[in-house]
Image: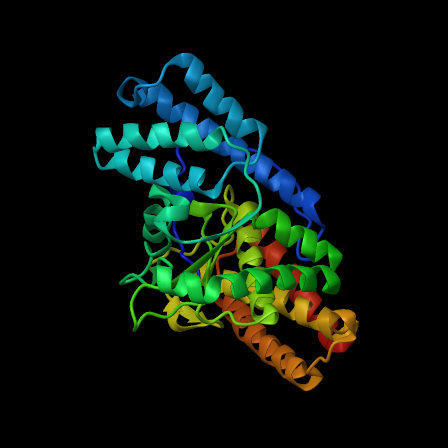
Length: 350
């Protein structure tokens, strides 16, 4: 599941051009460059906001200069982006006190280097950011689906989940070292969460509004392979966010709805594009798992993986048919989807 939000909310951003080498993982160097350019755009937007509303926000020039330098100089925590988006929403809604509080939170968070971490979604670990993460991930849903990890689930499931995540990352490294480095570069924070209510369902989630975070449902991720699949899945979304946060992938309005290969409900074309690309990246992961075998010579259900590959190929064909048939692709979108289609074509012929 992915929370789709328009990236036009980024205010007054200067254009930063970069070349795109798409589809195959290139390790962490490409992601570091995408992250750097994303942070440059964030810093530019924060400067614009401060120039327009600085007196309202209440920070001095030295403190503000440090904020801009921090955002430019190093990787920042996903909730820096979360606070930024909520700051924009607060300013647009005319809530100055909330905006000033969010500005202070951005200053505090941006001073800290982002580090790889696995955290439960609860207030004890994440403080006020726990509620923020829930709000932002649920923003595109008709009703909330992602909720905090309560004490009971935390005690019963967390240590097993932590161990399985470590094994999942090692599995991705084993399957494709470049993919492993790319996933680690894209996902700096893995968040363990639970369904918001007994009738809510979700698997995993990511959002531009929390750039660098992937949220997984602890209840249903019970093996390293399931977790590895979800990390590859969400890393693919984050890669597209990084590539397209300046130039969209498609020009279709969000009001238009189309069939999606990964969802039963019709989705905007941007969502169909994302889901189709995810199918091709998962196909790459499982194809290389089949070729390399499981680490340590452990047993591998080759028949099940072959069925998974066939299912992903079918879903990719469905999605690509919608994209190439109905999408108003930008040059970037055309390049990305054709690269994915080229990979799938070569994989089918192999």
